[in-house]
Length: 115
Length: 109
Image (cartoon, rainbow over all chains, first blue to last red; front, side):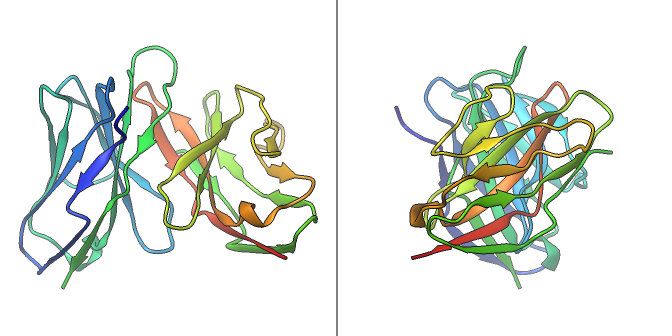
């Protein structure tokens, strides 16, 4: 069973640029959640994708957007980068979002630095 | 709005000492709570959830709705318990997790 993978590992961008982060879900999982973890903070929920549709969103502006593909992998896109977007971005996959909670398995994260 | 508070940033104990990592939550619905752990150079992983009522690696956590708390406890800490611990609250039909800021547990030999 392959775990959750994320790419790239590290990324440096400048203010105003756009970035795309990628996540491959664990085998058999159809749900992907994205979290932002700023330094010294816990992960903060950005949004979740279930069967290629957005299935809930946290308190993040529209310049944070995402996609989920038929193979359940996912992308997080951030436009007009700001300095405060510098953080570790975590992806988590789970088996299903319907009914009771299914454990979310986290990837190693992508460290984004905005200069 | 839901909130998870972990009041301490760091807990340092000697091996064999008892450990209690504090977590308080605020949520109007029926809470479902978790503890996640991140060991050095490893990814975030689930340690335990209150519904399962299990003891994992000697850790237990009891949900106290009256005090809105979900403290993590272990009677005798081991060096391998040194890690970052996050308390998390599950809300919404989409399994959104709200995390606390985390606490670093350091177990000295």
